[in-house]
Image (cartoon, rainbow, N blue to C red):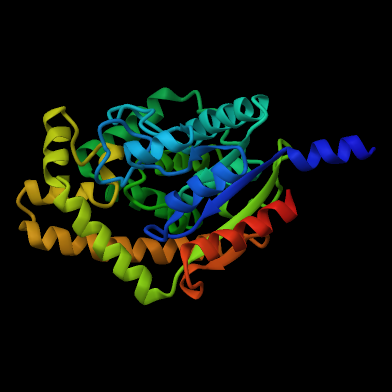
Length: 317
């Protein structure tokens, strides 16, 4: 019994979550070093190849400190979904456990995190390919808003939850509605996975400090060549219709290249949209009842914060 208990305690993932620019990457690397860990990214933009600057990927030096998974793993032209992410991430987690190491999950994409800590069945695609093609053509010819309006009429609750630009999910909701089924609200799923235990760490800072860090990060990625990166992606054939190009930083620069804004307006919009995104992330992560929050603004140094976090981690392993 005691041996079984120890094995169960060891078989835990460590989650490092929080809003964008709070410092997740730096702290996750330090936590991984101290826990014999490997990092599994939970960031919907960092998983794409060729999208290094706008997604604020870890630097080459950071990637060399501990092994990272799902960074630059997917071609941005490929269709991608939370279901595919779940498969890839769970495979990585399983392999990390096999090596006797600790998976450290870090990133700010709430749905992706949900897919790892809760029992989420994304289901199989419906077999009515003609109906799916019809919906795809509506989005292509009339825009995402027209498709979302259709969902609003068929399933208003799903329409409230799903962003109009998330075409794949809008289509899945319409397919479910057509079959007389309601698409699950994944944010309300409460049953934890039985695959492993979780140690949930939430990082926060006071609003002024966080917003300053967000604005500084945006200025940094612009100075590092965000414009050239997006121009290169467009030259590869990517457009604003590709899911990978809907991320903050990319969509605004594409709009700039298409003449919607001048560059300064696009940069200001990136800052504004990133601040709004951080608010939504905080709201999402606050729903995790077992999340242990650490206010990094309240510590006198990063080392002091790290020591406090590690004390809590080792206490709960």
